[in-house]
Amino acid sequence: MAREALDHDQPLSFFHELLEHGCISGIVNSLIYYHDTHAFFDQHYEEIEALREEFEHDQGVSLDISGDLKNALAWFSFELVAYRLANDLEII
Image 1 (tube, rainbow, N blue to C red):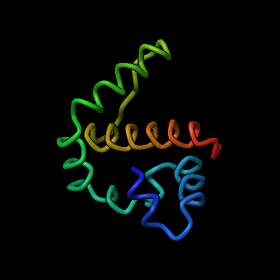
Image 2 (image 1 turned 45 degrees about the horizontal axis):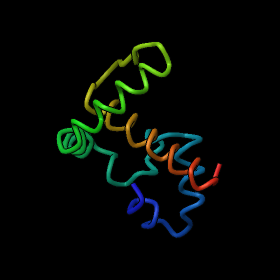
Image 3 (image 1 turned 45 degrees about the vertical axis):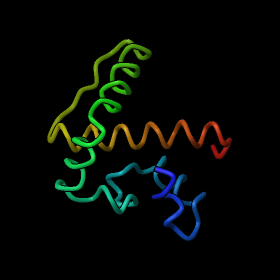
């Protein structure tokens, strides 16, 4: 996640764009195509599941996922980690 932010000329702008528009905007170069999001999901499956379970527990609801499961959860996890990092760094 941090590597992706540092690949942009203005990392703070990257965080703002990502948190406002999400991965669907194409801001995350490594998560644009299904083959990339599927590989990310497969590589980070256990961490993604832990994030999903924690989120659902904290919110008291299940994620409503439509469309491609691996893509949706890859984007969800990336955005959640970005939100937490931005919050910890007081960027937002």
